[in-house]
Amino acid sequence: MKIAVVTGASSGIGREFAVQIAGKYGKMDEIWLIARRKDRLIELQKELRLPVRVFAMDLTDNEDMNTFDGFLKENNPDIKLLVNCAGYGKTGRFDELDIYEQCGMIDVNCKALTLFTGLCLPYISNHSRIINVASAAAFSPQPGFNVYAATKAYVLSFSRALNAELKSRKITVTAVCPGPVDTEFFDIAGEKDMKLKYSEPSKVVTKAIKDAALGNEISVYGVTMKMAETAAKILPHKLVMKVFNSK
Image (cartoon, rainbow, N blue to C red; front, side, top):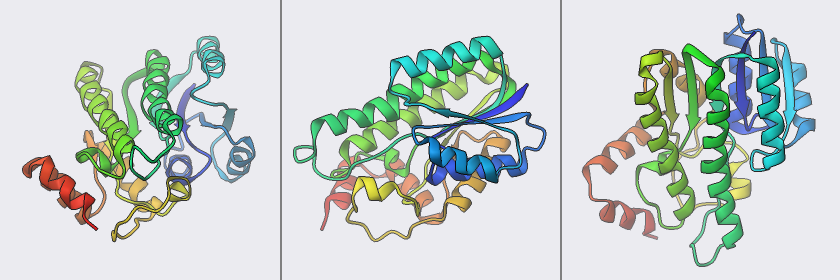
């Protein structure tokens, strides 16, 4: 049974991944949608062309993860595409934000992504794809977006190293690093003081799927974000942080 798995599928970029995968990967037997909001997953299920299996679960809940691990062992699927999209962010100074919310970002964006990838990896066959949604915030430390940027730097580093480790199995790992995207993300994160144009989720996901198919380890949509990636490589991070912290 060849399947695609998408976490964070109830909204935003994750939902768009599910829609595009269902439209472009007709040879998949099923697509597995994972998120906490079951009602939204059921709504999405009705829209997709592929057979859908819904998992209403919390990736930070050990019992939910153990249950999913057991389901994998029982069904022994052939995972051809894994998309790790679950995550959230909060804007603001570290000393002003709730510390438990900030640690929650680490739990979801880093720990859960790592654990879920590890659970799925034994079932990911050769010549398959893993797509991890990071962020352009991963390119440099960001005052006012401190912990979130740090978690996404972890996702980027983890993805690049895992891509190298899995080359012998012909499994490509692609880190998607978009700038601000027109989703519900900032409804939760809070508005960040920036003047960047919001990208359309469909365009970000289209490029991500294409880059994964080409075997690229990073997918960056848009000229502005590509310039930001280059600047973060060339300029001292101290200078980049001054730019992000300027009013």
